[in-house]
Image 1 (spheres, rainbow, N blue to C red):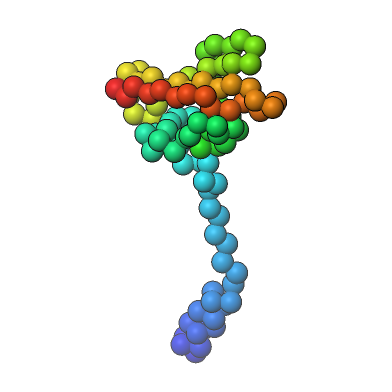
Image 2 (cartoon, one colour):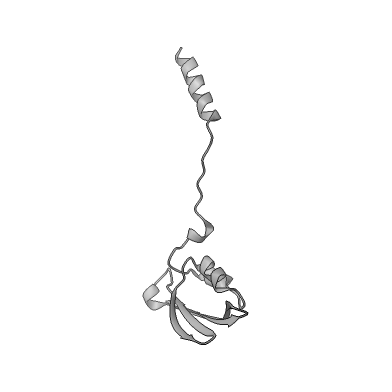
Length: 104
């Protein structure tokens, strides 16, 4: 009888649906930027694509008509690192015009 119970329990588990919850790709380093993420960003990328890659919108440090700079926090030694991306508005979309990082 014990054996029948074990077989039925195993069968019930095997038939049960498996729920796998995966974190979104953008949740790997929320709020900070890794060197790998920084290296992925290319000139011409939209600000939305950068923010999805960096997992953060950073902080606007400069703004003037058609141009803006944003600073982002590094994941490692944020007090000693600087990450900046400059954007230019083209056809209504903010796009990367340059980027710079100094890692602590």
